[in-house]
Image (cartoon, rainbow, N blue to C red; front, side, top):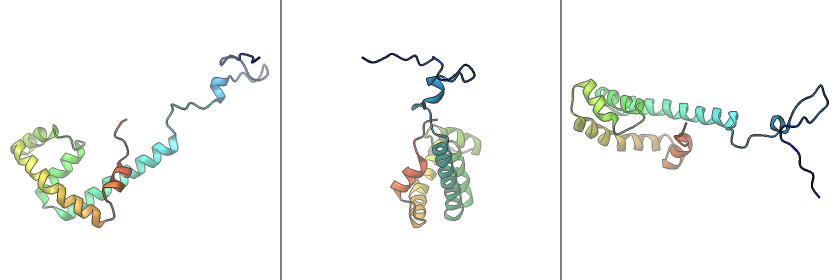
Length: 126
């Protein structure tokens, strides 16, 4: 017959009042080392994208793509970017659409294909 143990009961002596809650790992908690590694990958990807944008696009298109990147590549941000730059949303969409294949090709030439890009980006929840 198994004995029931309280998760809140003290494990040690009177001086050591640790409970099972204190010593068992929280499986739902995110590991700091993995969070740091993911952050480092995302920062590397950001620097690489910025370099590719700066070297592969005209100054104006690079400005638009950096604004788009800063907005999380959200299609809804195109109107906001257009408003800031005094152009139409359609023009922003056109620039983004034309720039994406150029950026994808440049990233591939730098060893970053779709699979590697997905690994570096990680899930976008946070």
